[in-house]
Amino acid sequence: MTGTANHSGMRAETRVLKTGPKRTVLLIRTDTGTSQVVKRFHSPGLGGHRLLGAPGDRRRASLEGRALRRARAAGLPVPEPGAVKRSPDGGWEISMAAVPDAQTLSEIFDRAFSGSGGLPQPKLRQLAGRIGQLLRVVESAGFLHADPHPANVLVDPAGEVSIVDLARSRVSGHGPAVRRSLVRALSRMREESSRTFRRRVALAWLGSEANGEWTRRVELEATAQRIHELKDRVRVWHRTSSATEVRKGFDGRGIAVWVRDCPDVAPPGWITRRVTGPADETAQIWSTLVRAKLHRIPACEPRALALEPPHAVEYDQPIPGEPVAPTELRRANGRLKSRGLRAVTSQEDRGPFTAAPDGTALVAPHARLETADEPDPGAAHRESYHQESHRRESHHRGSSS
Image (cartoon, rainbow, N blue to C red; front, side, top):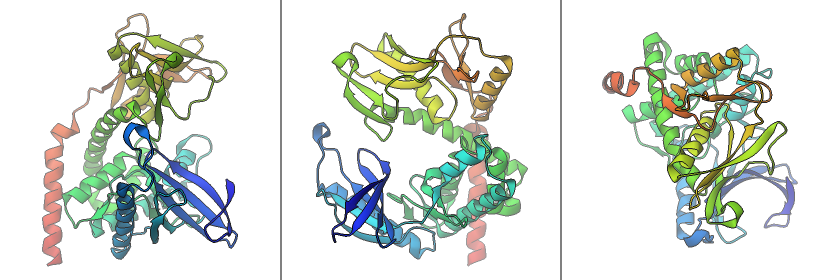
């Protein structure tokens, strides 16, 4: 956190909440005790050069303000929007009220399900109920969030929830699209929460409608959605994004994409390895490690991928030692199965896992992640699921008229 002066000369403390190639989100606290969130837009121009004050930035800021106002008018718990104006560097920004001392749902999940003490069961049940009530309000308002995931839900110390990051979101009326959006929101909790927690959320959202068969069907649907979504998201890790940066390649040759949060050197008990080879082979290693990271499955850590010849990939792996223990293998396969995946390898002399210094089974770079041998809910259940959504919608319209 750094001390700065705002436009009126008042001292303020600024903390970066999120940053990426197109926008930076700041929390600004003044000496008077007030605080606000400021989202500053800064489009990358041709060749990656920043375009200050680009018309698209003004439009993005204005659209976010409009989405916030419409969501508040629909009764949704979202921050109160402020003005759209020029930022100090000449770009465009929108301010909004801050939620004091709030945590993201992702941060709470990390604490609750990390195995490091977690949260008391009564608080978890209360939280599941609040999230379920939020989904009910969202569905009633016909609200479609463009990016519904746990990091875009804030929880204040009293347990009240708010929705943030409304760019490209809209209030568009009732319909199956809203229900599918909320199922997508549930799917994005998979890597961070337990099945029991999600079941409690569904019950608080839908009551008796969320029976065992419905929950099973939605879990399968959510699993298929999440596999497809994260497999597709690997493409983002081939360009500059909030997670990666494109710059000079290995030894200054060509260009490569680098993971932003990697330490300069591998941690104790690990080594950094660079593998050269055909583009498809290095891309496969990168895809495996990135997908595992996105699914929150323990794996060797990706560092960089060369985007031009000579093709290579760099990652951190444990220093070879003891083989993976059978109990850890079962645990690793269970984690993968819960996400609808399995790890395979074509190398007969090496399995798909390697042991971390603490014994944890990690997905190895030479492994591949495949969809597990389970019925595809996209084929077996999608039609009946959407038919049921249409039936519920027709019933809702009939009861409302």
